[in-house]
Amino acid sequence: MEFRYLPMTERDKREMLEGIGVEQSDELFSDIPENVRFKGELDIKAPKNEFQLMKELTKLSEQNVNLKSHSSFLGAGVYDHYIPSIVDHVISRSEFYTAYTPYQPEISQGELQAIFEFQTMICELTSMDVANSSMYDGGTALAEAVNLSAGQTKKKKVLVSKAIHPESLAVIHSYVKGPGVEVVEIDHKNGMTDLDQLERELDDDTASVVVQYPNFFGQVEPLDKVRSLVDTQKKAMMITSSNPLALGFLTPPGEFGADIVVGDAQVFGIPAQYGGPHCGYFATTKKLMRKVPGRLVGQTVDEEGRRGFVLTLQAREQHIRRDKATSNICSNQALNALASSVAMSSLGKQGLRKMAWMNIQKTSYMKKVLHENGFEVAFEGPFFNELVVKLSHDVAEVNRVLLDRGFIGGYDLGQVDRSLTKSMLIAVTEIRTKEEIDQFVREMGDIHG
Image 1 (spheres, rainbow, N blue to C red):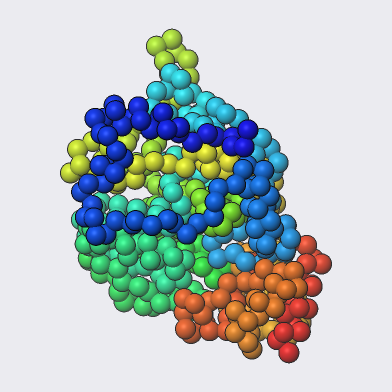
Image 2 (cartoon, rainbow, N blue to C red):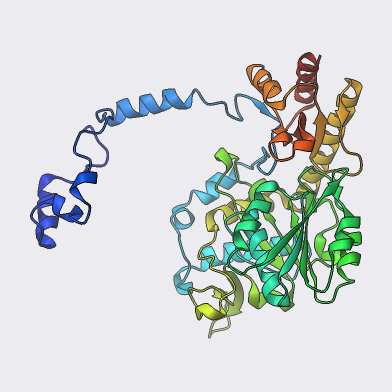
């Protein structure tokens, strides 16, 4: 047999047409004017059998550069971290892998408990009261937080640091068009949010202040100072976007008084895989739990007193009147949330802390070696696993040469900020070795001249 999955036969096609009372399939397209219909043959290859197709696709895939063939120093929101082997074993189980929506708790207890555990671990990392069962990614979670703050405070202006991920900033601009929220961008100065400008822009119309911790450049923002400024305006909220791995070592935003903490759980158990799919998290205070977008899983007991789990407090337009809904997010990333839960459980509290510490130490070593080899690191101050280095050549040109030498280089910051042209954002995770770091800097030095 040439095909694993047989296409429909002529008999199947005829029976379907008869079932809907149509003689020819062309009648299904009668609403399309004749003059715009395609009449010829598509210029595509003839179909191949399964073996030949797999051989061709394998050959094509081998042309790709990947994280096994090259050492990666590229981060900027998607990172190459250690993933415990148990993650794939658990998420590949059919009861998880094929599960979609746990609407029927009587047959979905395993899925619901897994999601509940994810929520619990996110709350512990962020030091917040409640977390949802995940969102599409960190960017959409942040934009949802912005809209929530505007709805809660009845104010229409948010102050957003330009030191957040530029793609997240773009998502915010898209999301606020509907509710008509004004976004005021706060510049960065020396790699950190300009607190002087933030203070000037804060006023009675401010719904929230948005910062990233650590920020897009890897710098650790002073959340205590941000919170003090926010407190000068009644009802204004502090929204923090955080790398959850960094929170294994850094003081969590909840301890600084953050109202909403969001981020991306890709760092736990989710491969880079071309930039997606991801798993966003959304954590907040008990006061705001009825406004949380997406799904929440709650713990309860059945009529016999046994512990059980159910979906609860859903503020989505699917379940309540549209005029009362606070979000139109209609799904969650349950499988990726499970992967993150398994990864966190496998690492444990001490392992997670050690993993975060290794990111800090190895990036510090990268900074030291860069200095020793004549490179200028752009910003000072505490940082997590990313830093910005200034180059004498275009970053794209440097990255092309690095690729030929077995390395995936850093992110070209000139793409998003002209003031950072010829500046590269380098990420160093726990799986990069001393030898890889040393060789990477040597190769950079050869190109740098």
